[in-house]
Length: 200
Image (cartoon, rainbow, N blue to C red):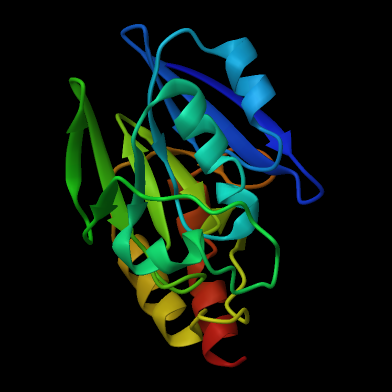
């Protein structure tokens, strides 16, 4: 598995290209991502969104139309594809597949596990491919996603962290912003974040 990433737009949102068996998955194509994706792919097969915030979905439709490939997003965040809760004028996009909960998918022979961790958004998810988590805005290096946005939920975030801290095994985490980390490293500070969110 080969992973490329590029921070996009003012929010420096990581767009990922994941190459397996000469097929490429596009994860969270943010602002003006199409040009970089064109330069770095030969056979893209799908777009995967970790959640519906504008900086992660901005180029969805442009990439869809450029390569004629399907778009996947958790069903609870689908409304954000056409109505931005943060007031940004986002190009509308249309999902081809709505993911339900912790759903396992196989896209052209590539196994993908969505794991739903609501809190930052109602459908916020990580995308698990082999031993890697593309953690979107759920987990960052030494931090977690905000829970004070419209449609965010501190209560849901606490439950998601309590779910994540129990997961066995280790994964490399590629987050929606900044640099990579590991699940084991972040599990060590999850008790702090659970108490912080509870007391906020």
